[in-house]
Each structure stands twice: as structure tokens, then as C-alpha cells.
Image (cartoon, rainbow over all chains, first blue to last red; front, side, top):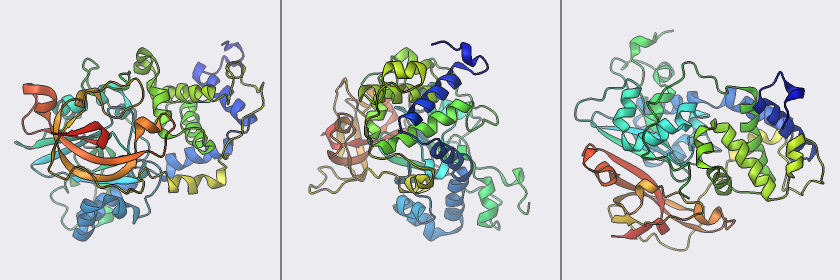
Length: 205
Length: 219
């Protein structure tokens, strides 16, 4: 395929432009719908959803129990429903067990609570290593486990999607859920890192 | 299939490197590719397992070197070509040469929110009871189908313990062949890391996989 007419575009940009034009002409897609899908995942659905789930579980024991026993219903109750979040499982980190989520076979990821996955999550280094050497993966992220802590890896082989509930950082006992949300990172909900320490953010900020 | 997608346990890719301040999309085409694949689902011409199989049947060397959204583009083009929705010559020059096929529906912007919120649950009603219970020890089958499967190589012929019963779900091996109504009981099965990887693994560690009944034989 010649790129002579699109010298300002990368080959993939040129190819996608031609493909989108063709599929629009054939009536298979509506470019405005594509805009809307991109907008949704860039601005409306992302790790802030999962952070709200985690902060609520940290501050409301009844919700934490519900999340543990029926994560699908508990998460859906907050309005986080839909594609790639139809069937949810929440796993809780503590001093004795650390959970890590992967999809070795493709890129399964809980879109409703975390948005679209980062590139590293979809790439061969992570997908290959997470199951055979999860402690090495944690080293790659600079995450040091408490002594004696076990690692449980969850390979997302079905339509069930996993959300890690990280441990609530010490020193946040008087923090509200809204304040706590700012400590809950995407990576802490995949399991490659811990939640942020309170000194990383200002409680009243 | 034993394709480039079945990565669990491979070695030599180096450390996991996180890109600092990674953007949601690295180029315009990545955003359009993601959205196009999502939108084309509404056409009703394939299911998610057929879509995964189209991606994983890329030559392994291509699968390993392509950016992830390129894998999606190759997969969706393959699906459309197989179904006669597009012709190779149309993909070459980006203009229509043959009449389009009828599709279930075209996704419109005003319907995007409702479609994304609805999702596509994979559980199906069942008249049978699960054969296994939580706590049962079970062994995975050793099978190497050329078609789609969600039992990765590293977990074939291994013994684990049922840790949860997850429901009665669409069975990917059949759905990828177009038999989207076949469902089986789905379990979470926990394998010790030593069972999967031998003495090099930490004895405390484990891996869970979500596995359908046909992947399991009672031990």
C-alpha cells in the first residue's frame, strides 16, 4: 500500500483513516459513535470509579462485606455497570496475602472500574511474568511485600473481572471516603503497587 | 490454540516497564481502532470469543511485535474479510466496491452510553447442577485444540482446588465456533505456584484461573 498521498500520516494513521472511511461508506459504523466511545473512556470511565469503590469499602464495613461476598452487586449499586464489568470479583489485600491481577491470554481488565488498561498490562513482559514470577513483577514496580506475605495471582481467563482492594494506609483513620479516594491508584487496584501513603497527598487539599 | 497470545510463563521479555504519564492513546489511530472495534460489535456479526480467536490466530511473531491496538485492527479486518463484509481490494484503497452486507444494527452516538452501560453478561440459565463443590480437588485436562480455548498451556494437566463457583457461563471454545448458546459451569480453581512451576516457586504462592467444567476432570 502506498503512503505517498499521506506522507504527513504514519502508516497506521493512514490505514485507520482509510478503514474508517470505508466502513462508514458501507454503513457499518458511525464516526460520531466512535467519538462518543473515545470520549467515554478518556473522561468518564476510569480508575476514579474503582477508587470510589475501594474508599467506600475502607470506610463502610457493611459495604466491604457486600463487596467481598457479591462484588458484582456491590459495584453495580454505585452505578459502575456495563462492558467488561458484568461479572466482578473483589480480592482484599492484607499483611498475609497480596493479590495481583493479570490476563495472560489477552487483555481482560475491569473497564467499568479502571477504564482501559495501560500498555504494560497488555504487553508480553507483564502477561508472561505475572504468573511465573509475580514477586519479580512486584520488584519491577518497586513494591516490597511484608515479610512472610503470600502472593495470589488471578489470571482472568473467563468473563469475570478482578478488582484488588489494597490495604488502607496507616494514619488515615480520620479521613473521609472522598479524601481516601486520592490514595487509591490504578496500579494499587491491579496489585502491582500499594495505595499511596497519606503524606503523598494533603488530606484537606 | 497454542498461539502467540498464550504468554503465561514465557521468559526473556525483560522487566515490566511502566511508561511515565502514559496517555490513554499513543496515536490518533489507536483511539479510532479501540472505538471502531467496540462499535462494530453492534453489527452482530461475531461474538467476543470469535473476536479473540481472530486476534490470537495472527502469526506469533506478529502478535508479539505489534502494538496491542494493531492486533485489534488485524483481528477485526480478518473477521470482516471472512464474513464478506469487506473485500481485500476495498481494504487496499479505502473505498466501497461491493454492496454492504446487512448488519444487525449500526451503533449511533446517542446509543453509545446505553450500550456501554448494558454490557454483555456471559451467564446463562442452567438446568444442571455443578459437578464440583468448593474445596474439591480437580485436575485440568491436557488438550491442545487448534481452535479457541481459555485454558492456557501453563495450567494444563495440573491439579488444583475449587475456590469458588462463578456461575453458568458461555463456553468460549464453542462460542468461537459460532455456537454461542453452549454454556457450562464456571469455577475459580486455585493452583499452588509449586504445582505450576516446580521447586523454584515460593511455597506460599498460588495462581487462580477461572475454568469451565469441560476443562476439568475430578481427581
